[in-house]
Figure 1: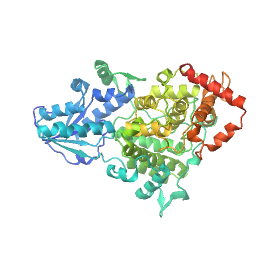
Figure 2: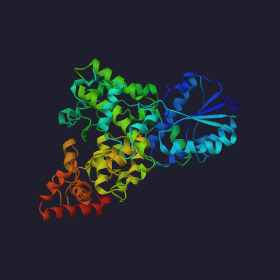
Figure 3: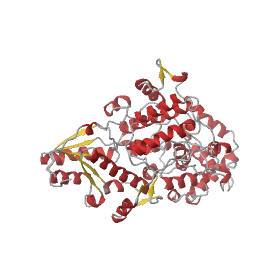
Figure 4: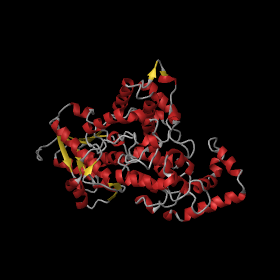
Length: 524
């Protein structure tokens, strides 16, 4: 590209805006320059897993090459070119001056901080230089941005199930003559199977990719970018639309037949314990290499072509995650920001245990979930909600620290999807906007949905002894501590009736064990 050539228009593409089907790219314009840039601002707002940084940087590079091959003018900047810029606005101003730009255009960021940054600097700095600014939609989500305020009221988003059913009707997904296919909306009750020993041999080997990480890792080292987690010489995640489509095909063929059935299950006894039957498409979706409707349509087509292999319960469970939960969570985010990120309804204030960064804990469930996250920058939704998230909830960990950990460790974590899932669904810090009750569980839940407990140093059957599973006493500690807030909740009232039937001596012993665990979180 001729660095001296002027362009009237500069269009910014962020790292999670890799949508090749965006209307921007329908026409080639020799007077338009697309900019894709690695930024220290984005590597440093939270400490990220190294696979997350590499994944986004490699995908950005490949997207820039694809646009160039399609005939567009693209400027792909690495940290070597942007390292001296303090933030995104300073880089944009520099580029506008360098290329004599008169129009700056951008797709609306999906993170509040970035949207505020771009909207704030436009009137203050661009207009002074006679540069106009225009904001475009990302053309990715199924609920248009302008409709979010109508569907989601601040503080009262409504329940996901209601939203999900309306989305099914609106988009005519799994519908027949105005009614849900199969006669019911939700098959969640059928999708809670535990993996038995005979099931483990059937778990498919995950489809992995092998993009070299060498150049990115060298750049991160040159610019002293701090990160954590494991990485090798090759990244196993898709970094192009073509690879993402291959992963989608693989899921529909090899994983979807048992996805719903085992979507909540966990195991420590399989080489593929980290992937199981999950699609692992969240990074491809959240970076916008894939469109949600494209994913839904492909999965439904696979079901219709093989109804004997893929049951309705399997496909409905998957559609609910994409059409329902993903779109719903985005609505909760935008209707409640920026206040949402500081909510702390339960006033949790303890520090995150040090072993969240190493996985070195005696609790087998926590060790597996965290170690897997460090190895692959991935854990499925139940591991995030009912293993690591449940522990943080019961132990009263500061939701700011929990947010930072979740936002940093997972390759698919962007704040619009991470924050309501973590601070809302997992930590109940929003006071019940997302979840109708705290998702708190004792060791019984872990035992029911996994085989973690037999290999643990703690006993899941004990509550108050030194060898008792910490989750058991912490569960009752949590329920007792927040009794005034929860005892009148219809979904938790019965729990207190069971607790009150215990003798005072039993209750005291359990709470004493919980207090010991609280005082020794780093030693568990």
